[in-house]
Image 1 (cartoon, helix red, strand yellow):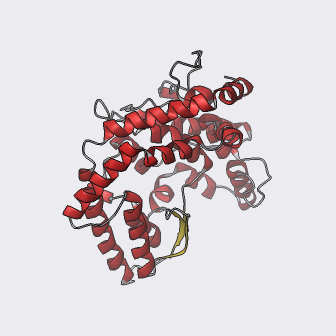
Image 2: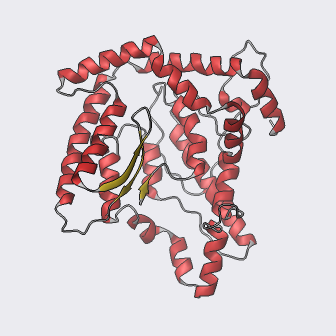
Image 3: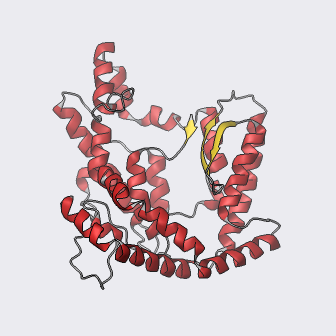
Length: 340
């Protein structure tokens, strides 16, 4: 199994979530129950901005249909869950139109993680070694297989019908040029995946460019130096969090539980394949030791960042505005072309 960000739909909304996360939440995230897509009001989509070139706008204003996450929005996780549920409801309608039964379903672990907010550091660290441990033992797939009602629906079909069901739901995965299945089509509609990809082709990746500028800004560089000094006081020598994450992945590679590791020019881990292990494999205990080490480092990294959020939020907002000003004519034309 290859460990990569899964699904074009997650990539499409990731940029908005990243920019929203740059500010501290004003209140605690909502943890109320979310039952079905149809019982929830729709999440707010990017608004149509009619301001002049000198007024503040957000990238989401130029991407029709993309969910809008305001900086520091305490409801960002709830909004994301609503969108996931809406995509599932659209999948149901698409499957029904093709003569198949489908029950909207979002794995509980995904909703719990989003509704709980970002700070699960003391449980999972950065989530790297925990994910590898689950994948290596097959436990990452167990909840879906047990709880997803659509598995039972498929298992109750004759082989020919089952093949038709899978094709309708997922499309022809062997043919990259084939029409998308109901699930991908629904997620594309809800998360504006194709629109985001078109924007990136037009002006480049805004979120990558803004992130690079933020990291290079002297104010953030100074924070990084303060963070690194704090980490050294705790016994860890790293210049930034990416170095910690790369260290964890390298440790797992040394153990022999990941392979086919690819690394970007800046040292960021791109992808890797997790090796499947038997339940009595001694490497499982070694992975657990890496999990514990990662959690300790992640807790230290979080604590050493205390008080940084306001600065990072303000710097990020500045560079988002600068990107918009630099590409305003292109962004306005893009929004007009794609129905804004």
